[in-house]
Image (cartoon, rainbow, N blue to C red; front, side, top):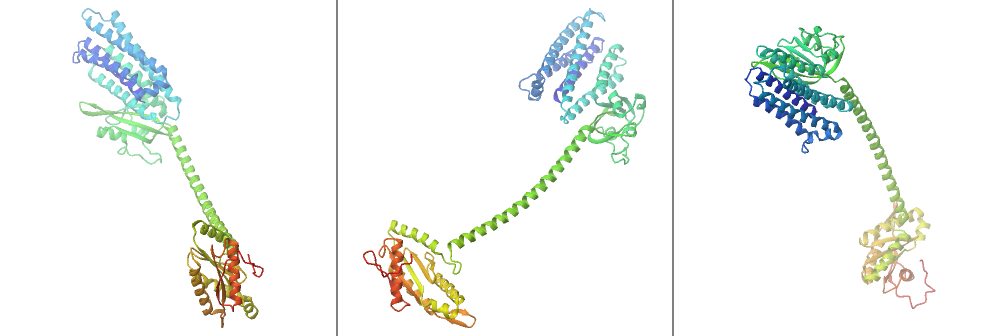
Amino acid sequence: MPLMYTMQQVQLKITTAHLWFEEIISGDRYVSINTVWSKISESENLLKAVLSENNNRYAIVLIKNPKVKIKINKMIELTKNFRFIGEKRWHRQSTSVAGSQIDQEFDRVFKELINSIQNTQVYLEQQTKLNISQFNTMQGILIIAATIMSLFIGVLLIRHQRNSIMNMESIKRQEQQVMDLLNSTAEGIIGVDINGLCSFANPASLKMLGFQQLNELLGKNIHNLIHYKKIDETDYSIKECPMHQTLISGKKTHVIDEVLWRNDGSWFYAEYLSHPIFRDGKVTGGVISFMDISQRKEAELTLEQAYYELDYRVKERTKELSDTNKALSLEVLEHKKTEDKLRYLSTHDTLTGLCNRKLLEQRLEKDVQRAERYKHPLSIFLIDIDHFKHVNDTHGHQAGDIVLQGFANLANKVIRQTDYAARYGGEEFIIALPETPLFQAERLAERLRLEVAEHLFKISDNKKINITISIGLADYPNSASSLHELIKVSDAAMYKAKQSGRNQVKKGSCIRNEHSNNVKAHF
């Protein structure tokens, strides 16, 4: 996490400043005193940046952990005091005696500051461990481990470069502080020489790898001890080993999904970082930091398995829903077809396919209202097939049905798209002609009469017959003032055509002022 990394940076800078200050005091002036003050100022600025309101990197941590803010404020005050006493000691160095009160005060503030930083780190680590879902903190831990590795490298360089210059007590004190850091971290840390032989291992690494004593690792090839096989137990060649590659290439390697082998032959999932150690521009060894990620791996595998199971169930359920939807769609389609068929049967004659009497009356009622509203004409035919009873008696009712169907087909061919025909009852039919005056209706009626008279109706494979029709005409509003009167007038005109010899078209007249006792009404 970023805050842990900041704490490590502050500790590294303070430790370095203290080390350089001791060098200058002891007579080694290859480092300027201003560089020491700069290191201390950098530490103070890093701590102040954490508390800055504009720093979103730490806002969540400070909100969730108010104690952290208190600890950081304390570290800022200790840092200021550390510099103040350091400057005081620097100005009095000519008269100061080793072990004097100001030396003791300087060491006391340094230790208190380092302890405060370490306590804050411990607190942050404890807070991090409380949230078991924070697997991604591993990356932050590796960054911390990398910082610790830098400290470890610093120890090796201190041992090599400062033995002839620095006071041995001061060196031991600095080394011990760094070693305390290495030994207290939860990450495993192992140092190797250029040949891959172990030169250092912290307690955490011994515990994770199942070794009791450091001597069990020192001087031995680390790859052959903990990295010699892959998870499938096939041999892991040292040439393939990322740890070994770091020593050859001088580049750090980061591996997030491999296994390390314990002393008892068991293994665990590990994430590790290999970092080279340089001396005089050449690789002289390396540092390996690692963490047991078995719990994280187990959680990932559990989540992956749960995902696949959920995905399988979703696909199965989706298929079930799709099949059900298809079945319902077919059922709805069939239901709609049935509804359409029932609706059609309720408004149409099953034999001829023409409008039945119910639909005819509904449409005529609307057309009469429209004609009345817009003062437009409306004409109708009332048609009766001549001698239809003779057809049934002579040729049978099946032949009569054929004649009725054939007439309906002829009528639909003769009338216009705006007109409509209906079976009114038995062998009687009505044809409605909206927006049509009586004289145009009369021409259309004559055309229909002639078409029927000339047509041969095939009632069997070897027999055809002729029929004729009688037609009565009426129009609205000239012949009648209502639908009821319109049908009565056309009916009277049709009977007039029959009485005149059949196979004729007759126009009806207004009957509002006439007696209609002799008129046969069919409505």
